Image (tube, rainbow, N blue to C red):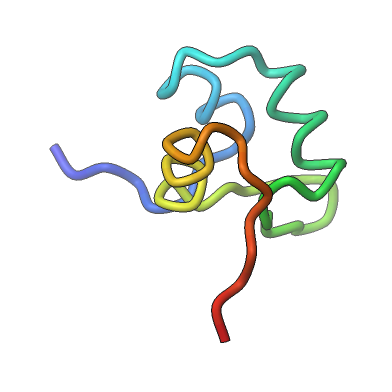
Length: 63
């Protein structure tokens, strides 16, 4: 089964066994980039995995 590249906050919480409210708070603080489409917020799986592996280090975009 192929994994989805982008996830909603609810899907991210389920996939990573992480509280929804915590993901929402981190996204609002700008801890990692999100894709905002209207009221929906999408998180790139690879970026969230990287965020967790680095112990919550703030995301820095590589130019």
